Image: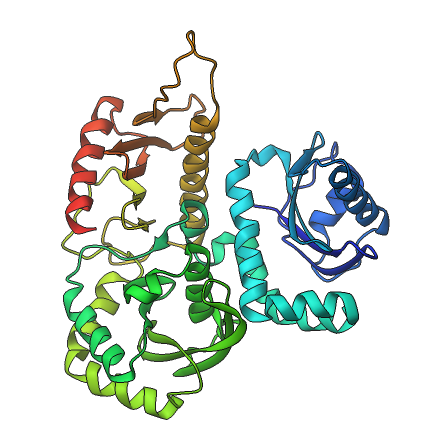
Length: 434
């Protein structure tokens, strides 16, 4: 996806942060100002005229009591998100992607959560009025994470779309919950989580009570904190702010790597010390190290345990449990000796995200009923085919009991009549495990 984020101080029209993905293919019909903005290197200056247009359009509508959420040109959609009364976030995307508004708005919620968590809302609010240059420099801290949120292919996550936490599937969580509870009881810590890459293995009740946006950003920080240097650190300790608890004080996000990409993380105050936390994690996890090693080898990168066997026609899938607010996905459902290439995984990831957004878009389109009945129906099944010979996949969507959703990317050679049966069998299998 090609995006451009602009964080503007509306008091003086000064851009505090500009980040953009530069993967948009050139379109000769695109307005040159927008095209250049989406293609230019991320730290370049942007046209002041564009800043003026965006700021004046939003402030003008606000004066007349109109909340401007988005506007459209033939080639670009601009989404507006009010950070506060004098700070504005604008997200630009090519209209050709036709992304549902609620998906883009949630991406803006994630960006706001990121800013608040790393820098702090009160600090941003104050410095934007007293020392905007200092704030602009401080925002350098969030650039790497902003780029990751704008370019979803870095994590292969679906949490930013589904508003559910990414997790793993098909293993006994009791052992990991036992480790987690022992550490939590020893430290009297309410917020603790064990993750593999950017997916949650087990989390405490306190952690699960954080907003979905906060959980997403925390797992992002745990996963990507030092990846810009291709380093897997043993320990991490970074300050964070949590709006859902107390935005006026900062907490510590302390993480210890068990092995591979498995981390134990807690949210705490000044205690415990890092060395103490390491010792406690070692004490309660050492006896489970063989089980943890199995998790690391069996669940990464497939994200499903080897005991879960999928039909050979499935190329990728996304499963969502709306009751527990978890989702599980895989881009390589079949266990293979050689992992898939990054290019194939990116292709499947993009197709699955597009299919999910297509379902969201179709459900949001309200058709006028023939009568005045207020009953609303939900789409529970749908399949998509394509007559284009270059298309090498079919898609199937299935929902059961309102809470359980399955999105499947099938190989093009599967008989269309077989997709429903395989999808139902797969959903039944996944519901037993998550």
